Length: 544
Image 1: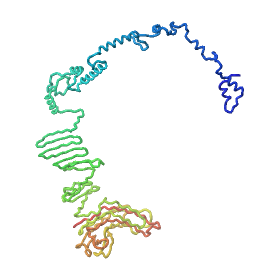
Image 2: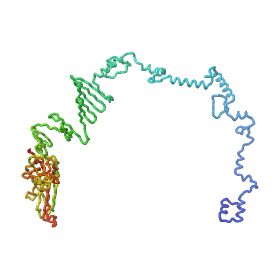
Image 3: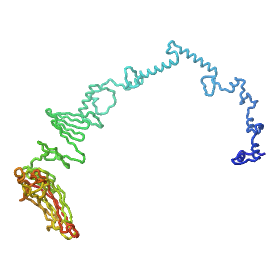
Image 4: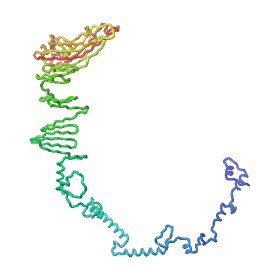
């Protein structure tokens, strides 16, 4: 039978295969039975291993193997034994003789350590004592010149340093201390009196400081001028100057964000408010009073004994200044509007201002249908008119017109101004038997007149104006307002009684009217008409 490899045998016995008789026999013939002896030639590397074993004839010779029956021969020929205490060697052996010498030395140390003092009778106790002494020395000795201590001792090194830096017994003179130039070290000392003299000398001379000096408690300077005592202080966040005279104090302080003045206990503060823009305060070359530029002034509220603003009487300027308000020697007020036009301001004693230029927006409307546009250009609250007054009414209006598409002109194209009684109505009867409505006409203008298109024209209207109230103003009494020759009783809304002029609330109404034959411009032929109007002035000047 033949020997087979292990892989061949494994291939015969795979799952599902049926090995043949010869395959079974070859399988068993390929392995060795325990009862069979193994030939020497079948042992791997046996011959090589036997060839390297020691020859018995090399026993005890040089480079041979060591015989184990004679120790002295092993020690002499095969071991490195050192017989001294200086050679050393990590692979060497120390002889027993040297061990004996070491023991004798140890015995001698033990004899030396023998003491009647039980605290020093062992080496460990001596070591402990030495360590304690070292610690004590490190505590007692000081090796610097700053620690100090009455129970301390300086080291020799510190004594050497003191010797090198010792001062002479010579005391510096005033001239030597009060120097302004650099000098070499001369080891002189300064006495307290010389130090005081030096400080007095420093304070009496002008000094130039080239570095920052910090004064946490501030700087103070005092001086006298006649009967006045001046004190200047510079503290963190403020600078102040105080003047004392007869126990009265005037103080000026500049602090962060404000300037403060205190005179006889009264404080005045100048402080920016809001921080929205740069502001400038001028001291004009006139009276020296403060004037503000590019800003506005808000005064305190008036009281029964203190007005909010006082404009003294004086001469008017030789030419008008835009925005100026002035009072002449007679006490009349003037203001200057655009184009340097100075106008007299009618006071409460001689005028009731209903509307002035710039107080209302301009009217601008265009229509080609029958339309009525109305707006309130001024509200007049109650208590504006007294119950009995007489004066004149003045109206000034600038207007213009234009037209665009269309061919058919309106039948009516006009601007009207009315006095409206808001909390009542007008009547020609003292008992209110007829209701004239809430409107009475003051002035009007016909825009169909023949002035040029897009050209501005001015309506100026004036008439007498009065308020009147007989007796207590009750029913049957004349009570209301008059314009020109016409008089209108003012009635309450429920017509229960007259409404006193003092209690009436009025409005100035502007109305623009377009009226076409084709009211809704059904045919599309109506001319588009444009009306522009702006009120220049609307006021009542009282005579009494």
